[in-house]
Image: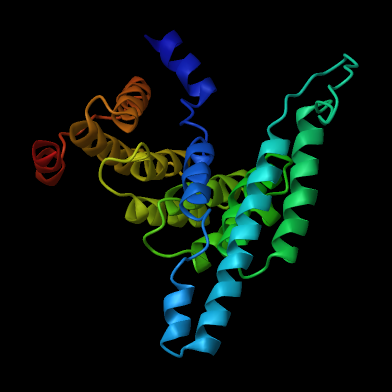
Length: 267
């Protein structure tokens, strides 16, 4: 048991990648904004000429930016082939030579894109894959700032806030700023919505940080509650594994609070 727990500790029982949802979420976002508002003619008829023109060109700007973001993300998803020189097909870009090259290209292209399309929803959305690339390059200060721009400017109803706060929390954690990481993960919990894939992950990350700070009893309580409320969901399984590690370290596993049990029953 001790050997297994030590192995799990070394692996850090890592949570799903902070950015797993980007592909599906971004595609859905782009599809929803791929058409120009068609009511302009009606507005013109009733005399709102100036307002209609402003709205029309604003929507055209958003549509153009959305399409360009989609093209950029598609280009950045081309494969990485190390140590082999491949001749790309006609009209295709060559594969990346390394993950570092992909991330560096992502930072360059999306930074320019956000400057060129400043103020659009597409530029705001581009902060997420940009922050991801900055994080993977070890540019944690840049990642914190980029994710922070998204959390500041995005609508509170945005389904991507969860991933943005998680990415920001990871960046703070990598900088060794554990209090700031804990706060980001608390905000992540607040941004979670019922039924989403990331449900409960903010609480799981809070427990990780508390354990790393030596507050293992607090961490154990959060994990016990999470295990009770999330069951076999991703966060629940991770909580169960992390509790086993703490138990092997001599931490008493507490009973879940009544509110956690009620949450599971309500679900």
